Length: 163
Image 1 (cartoon, rainbow, N blue to C red):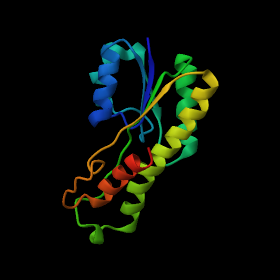
Image 2: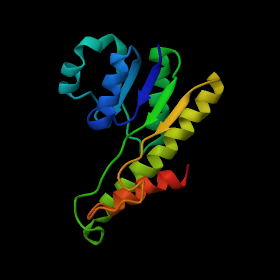
Image 3: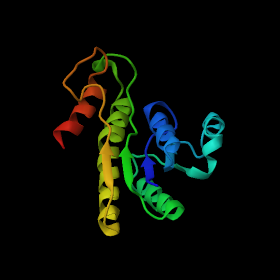
Image 4: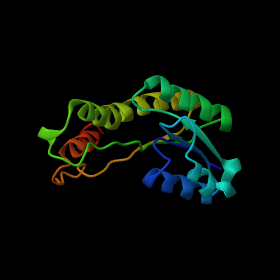
């Protein structure tokens, strides 16, 4: 049985990945910025209650990511797969209309969050002697441009450039 950690997994593709890993017998640490898992999440995953663990984590904070690793390791013993999935977009507007706090949030989540997650996971996976790190890309990682998503696309393309 594999032990999996997925950042940004309370909704969207992160939640769907968590659900699929659970269906296939894995233990999954689900994380999101909320201090507690959304009620809907617990309802949807009731049958897997013994196989998932929720940890609040804002990937913009390396301390939060360190805590995510420590909590998952305490829960499962080892971590086999770490998935950097957390992502954030800006408001759907032209980049020149986007305020600085939204711009900073998308950069800090989509770039620093992946870097911090990879740093923490790599450090501890080397100590435990195994593990895999997966970084989720997104719109823009393939040079595709969509109107009003240039900031998000830029951050996702940065993941490919840094691989």
